[in-house]
Amino acid sequence: MIDFDIILKHIGGLGRFQIILIFLVGYYSIPAGINSLAPVFINYTPAFRCSVPQFDTNPYYTNLTENEILNLTTPLDKNGEYDTCYRQRNKRVFHSSFCAKVTKIYDYNASYCIEGSLDCVNKSAAKIPCDQGYHYDRSIFPETVITEFDLVCDNKYLDALATSLYMIGVLLGSLIFGNISDRFGRKITMIVTSVLCFAGLLGCAFVHNFTLFVVSRVFVAFFGFGTFISNFVYLLEITSNKWRTLLGVSFQLGFAIGYMILSGVAYQWSNWHDMEIAMSIVSVPYALFLFFIPESPRWLFSNGREEEAKKITRRFAKYNKVTLDEPDIWNEADTDTSQVSDVTRDVISDNKLYHEYNITFIKKTKKRLLPRFVNSMVYYGISLNAGALAGDIFVNNALNGVMEIAAYVIVIAFMDITGRRFMLTAMLVLASASLICSTIKYILNSVYYITGLITLGVVFAFAAKVGISGSYAVVYNFTSELYPTVVRNRTNGVGVGSTFARFGSILAPFILALQAYLKWLPNVIFGVAAAAAALLSYTLPETKGIDMMETIEEAERFYNGKTIKNQLVLTEKNDVGYEYTNGQFDHKESIAK
Image (cartoon, rainbow, N blue to C red):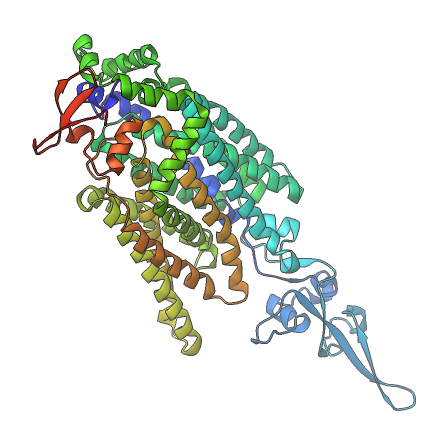
């Protein structure tokens, strides 16, 4: 089997051609960020109350402010706040002809009052659910999914359900397209999934039925994530070990830029249908880029398609302005042995054996699954909650993107120094501590109202965003390095690991919904979960300085604590296979063992 890392040493680990491909492939992370965080705006819940046509449309009462109408029509809950899911009925007291007081309960009817006078209105404890629809504050968004389909009060759970179903679409996409990408190639997966994702985006913009809205969003998630995971793995496979951290994290950076752009899109096109059209247009350039993107040479070599891989490799060399001394390079890179090729090729061709190795590697790194679950749950919990922070929703969402970029800069600067394991743990600890402090702040503020505590709460929220975004970037790189190329997509952090991550993101909207009952509870859940994930993350194996594993044998050696690739020195070849010594030259060991 050809070791593509050796080829990269000759053609350039990050040459001109790879840089071009990075920008072309990496562009997709921008619309991916827009689509994933779109619920911040398209599912925005504005202030609302029961519709009371007698006051909302009667010309005598057009001078009433919203607070005055609330006071006249809306009961208070046990906390002394307006219970906007109910309206009060009017109690009118008058004297009968027999001088006895008579009380009658009416629905609000302005005809009982004389030319706009409110003397006839007497509030009572009697209340009923909103039976004439809802009145929404449309000053920010003229129409959202919430206002169009009335996803408030008894239907509020449908809002969380819609976002969770989107994440289920992502989960299914990671399961199915991780497999397809490993089997049929990165490029064909990118083409098919991106075209169908665009169709789903455009279709979503024109639906006016809640069920169709949910179906179209799931469709976008399913195919969109198929593109995302193929792109991510592709970038790691066309570059050398030296650049993996930079590229893996930079790909996530595009995601943050995407949802910063989302703030501008939502501000300019505030109707959710218009937002969806704008989001689909942002995705168009990627479809054009696909014409210039070749298949991953590393994937081709790992699947025995050497002639195709060599042709693309020569193209890399040409654009990198490198002259290949081909016979020598191919001989140097050909690390294949009879035993190695048999195992690896069997894994590629035998689906049953393929699954057996999947299960084997999952068992070896099962401790990484909780951090993936928690990471995704907390990330989407914080990101989707931008609208609940004090301040302007557009600014808060954009600042979340800025915090995410800051986290990526920190990760790029220090991950190769501190190692993946330490960086992942530290970022999770930062997220956990910030969320817990935010909860303490809220409790203090409920007892002692201090204006500065509101600002402090926003600061803690942004600090948590830095921590969870940094850990999200690390975990993608980290788990991608734990598996050999032949089974990378199905079993790594963008395969089975991503499946566990999706369970976290599916749960996040329902945890956020708990704010309606206890505003501090979601942050407690997220904070405690992040702390547990941090403890477990520190027990994972370290991959700092290790080349990407190509074969099953290399992965087995790694998990058995033996040296691989750049830590190996070739000494001699015998009839059993290649013999290596470790970096200390203290003993020989056959790879056939």
